[in-house]
Amino acid sequence: MDKIILGLPKGSLQEATFSMMKKAGFNVRAGSRSYVPSVNDPLIEARLIRAQEISRYVEHGMLDAGMTGHDWIVENKSDVVEVAELIYAKQGLRPVRWVLAVPEESPVQSVKDLEGKRIATEGVGITRQYLIDNGVNAEVEFSWGATEVKAPELVDAIVEITETGSSLRANNLRIVDTVLESTTRLIANKTAWETPGKKAKIEQIAILLQGALAAETKVLIKMNVRRENLDAVMKLLPSMHAPTVNDLSETGWCSIESVVEESVVREIIPQLKVAGAEDIIEIALNKVVP
Image (tube, rainbow, N blue to C red):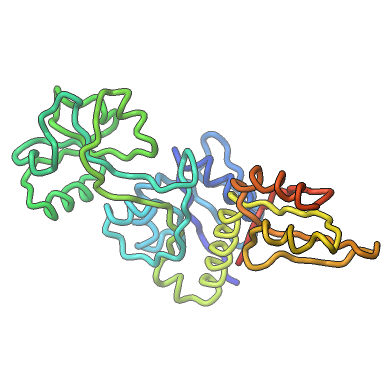
């Protein structure tokens, strides 16, 4: 395999990315002022770069691969290979949204009402394309930060990224429309993707990251069951394909194990117990690779 240079997002996504990389098997360590973190893999050289810039550096070959939001790929119009979608964000396992928002008391009810108005945003390209798609002519200005506080005194509306909408509500803003939904992507430079060694390494990272994400919501559940109660227990037990059943050394007993969604465990464990399951164990998972 060839060594690759991998861009990791500095800022709001950094902690979540480092955590996901660790679960995938890559320990990334960086000092508070370091832009060149260490990785426990001799074939990966990491660089900490703002998510807004990663797709440009990947496109132009300064980075072989990188992790950034789909929104910034769109904003930069970057010509890159999107290797994998990784659904995680700063606050949870869900997409983020770029939304059009206005002050609570604003008469604006749809994007059509912004004809001739002024909009502030960090996603200038995303917003301009949204206005074109809706046949609206409005002024779009780049916002260097604190975008929420600019309406209504400085602008008529904003386009801002949000996960929960709490910051918008705290600033007395209401959402008018969703401009773009975005998830994190693992992307690759086209030349690197055509290089067999680099492609193999990037694909390895993709498989392990997707496995780590899949494991975030799942657990392994194990139990012992008398053979006479097996059918009743199996009817209650969900699984990715089918539960694994093995005979125990004690005649008439078997063990069952299955990977299930963590959200259903609290519901099914009491039912499994009533159906005859014993010695029930729930185990956290690092990776689930289908």
